[in-house]
Length: 281
Image (cartoon, rainbow, N blue to C red):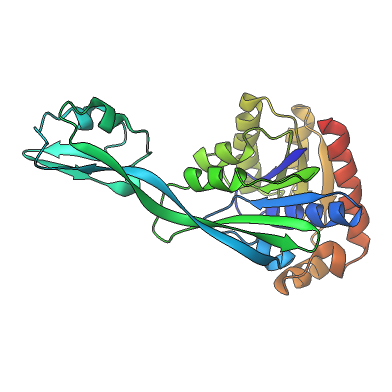
């Protein structure tokens, strides 16, 4: 079973939910894999505190042009939809950070002037946090193309009964790559105008993907009721509500698991996990 924990915006408590779900699942005897796909700013390791045992670089293929073979026909620039390669006069310019590694430019080059080379964009680290298999990606500073690294994170072998994926915030390409092939998506939101706006965008995305989902309202007692009204009108189940508890904030600031530092929350996350399993099967 693959459970993705996502949010329309950052700062809603997505990592709090995903790490605590992984923790209670392992406490209840399940074999669990935690995959942090928020590769631009992974922070699940702060709470799970894994022992990293392996690190592998990840790269994508970018074009390299042999000026001696190039005829400046311009076909490479015509096929590239992202302007990662352009023909300017008698020069071919390559912008690696824009390249999606489709290989189209090399295929259409009539003179064979374009080959592909690997450009390192980040790394995947694996290890264990107690019985939990831990995987996360670290995107190099300045890189803008995170989906290839997210794909590499998800391709790590894991024979666990349950995989929990910590998804990047938003609704763009990195999110689509992260939630793809999930059995269930947990959307974490907060009862604020910004939270509701981005929740609506996330719901539209998930419904387009046709993946079952439910909503968790974090800091449920400090905002308005518009999030609840929206969910009621659109037949969206609010699976759990987490209060604006100072104890949670203090545990978070210390890098501690909420359900470990505050025992009463273990029951909340255990019930949530059982609810998710019932909906996803």
